[in-house]
Length: 169
Length: 440
Image (cartoon, rainbow over all chains, first blue to last red; front, side):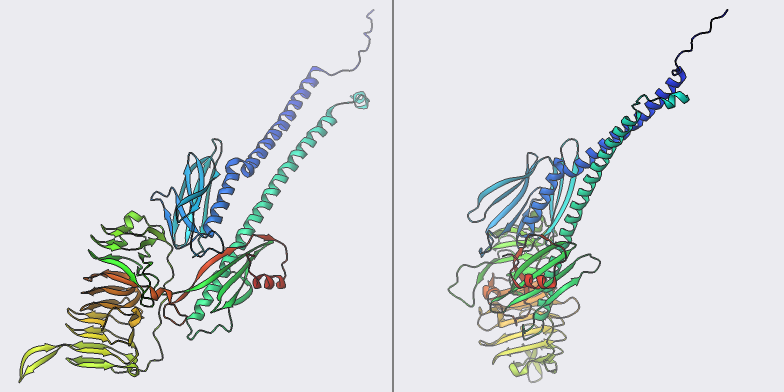
């Protein structure tokens, strides 16, 4: 007289659910790791190309290059500790004598470029080339001038070494 | 299980997978884009730098060729250096250059460098630079004795009173320039780039101008003339001999000795030998030494000049003298060029004042004059022991000629054009770019 139990609708067993859950967690974690790694990689690459210390480094290199290449090879001054450099140049193509000076120096963590006339000596402008300067040294050999600049914004450090040859009389 | 698979209920696995794939794809594309842009930027920057270096190399090559032409006398500029698409060794760039202009109007060098799609142009005007652009210039040490003043004069323009005088060394070592107590330089003092000014310029002397570092300029070697007839050595005792322009030639040696003054057979004194130069320009090429015994003299008469090319040494003993008869005159009255392959030693003395130039960029020079010295000295090392002052003849620097010795073309003004990025620049375009001033 045993009543036949009504047939229950087919479901998942506990084991099936656990296995599925574990697989889903593993797959989810894997996807998460990949996504996080990708995001980190993207951020790293983006910072390497576009962070302030990198772009400031580009600007500093370009500025140093432009000033040095058009500077006079006949005269220059470098601090004994290499902390600043002063070079001389022509104000315009019509200038007959070297009549301008350009001085790179670091002040309060900024690399500055002071531009002025020689006779009488007066400052015409002071531009901030870049900030976050950790160290900056200049040295000269022959007609070559080299700047070693380290920028540090607290999270990233960028060291650039830029060399240029002075060409003008 | 079969029913489950046949179930038509919608699941969420496929949408989830699609979403994940889309996210991953987006991130992948972003990374690729970032990397690609970085790579493109890097290639463009590298190409620009390489093109610029190639342009600089082209300009250097053009300048070198101009200076090679300068070695051939007389100067001939009927053809000027020109080249198109010169492949630089071990370098993925080419350069093209051209020199335009004339001696009267000046020469302009144009150079174009190309690497990939990048083009860079530089141009420069050049000028002749005298071998004697400085009062005193050494490659190594320069020593001024105590109480010496360095100043200027202008033998070509006596009304000129504003002199631009400088002395210096192409060395950046410590003690490259020593200004002893009481010495005064009425002008600038320079040493080579890389020097510490306080260490490189030493002594208690005074500099009225500036002290600075400078890029060393080339000091070209002077070649001995090959068109002078060979002559016998001059070796005289107690005689006075005269050299005239027709006596110009190649001599193995000049030795001026003291002769004995005899009374009977007894020597009662000595008489020095004297070599006089008169009648015009005398040019001597010495393959050996010049030696002057005590009190012997080489005297250049007014209106004459003496040019000496020497492979050996010059020894001037006490009381001897190499000088002009009426100093000061134009410093070109006596010109001495060292032309030997080995290290030479030039020891010049003058009984009173010395006027002349010494060009010995690889050799040691000592000058001892009882009076002032006038002219210019270029040496490896120079020791000035004169009793008087040193005066630089500005005419040496200002009146430079293409046929002078030791002249060299140097860049006067230099310009750079903005970079251009264009693929496959045509030959005609290069030629047209080289024809015009790249700056304009």
